[in-house]
Image (cartoon, rainbow, N blue to C red; front, side):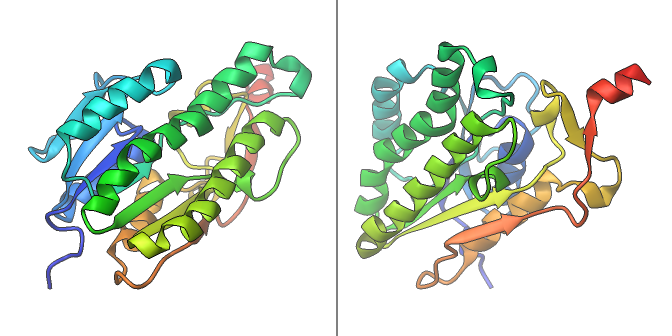
Length: 244
């Protein structure tokens, strides 16, 4: 039986590493063509003729309307988006400079809205398709030192829920995926990380499998929201490790 992703063309943001790279690889294995967007692809290990990298820094939101409009005119075959780009920053609110707040909101929320805005008309023109937004467990419950990050992810979740109602008549399915701690370079710049036991973290491939499963569902079925979490929640402090 032919996979429902075979022959489709989808955009994946944050495609050079982590969850975005895993999603891209999963889509490629199922016969899709992937237009991968990321800041750079120097360390990207994807080797597939149907993977088309587009270097673009989504944090530069002022340039995005023009750049995305040109990209949309070039890729009129798009029938799906998987928005994985984003970053984590944690700390008490007063530890954030005003520009830090703006930068996190711009990348985690505004840029995602811009990408969807640019390609939604094409998806509708092509008869419908899918938009998958990457949320977080922080979109389900705010936690200490996560005020700004949680705010961006709560907003992405609200954006997804509203789009779900707005786009159904145009045959566009909207899904949000909320992973817990995923073992990626996301934690490289943070003061904490998941525990070392395999039960303490999610693999990027786990998230990719969930995304591809939602995209492969029967057209009349929408996977509205997926929550993924490690079997055992263990958080390690890097500061404690350094002290030891």
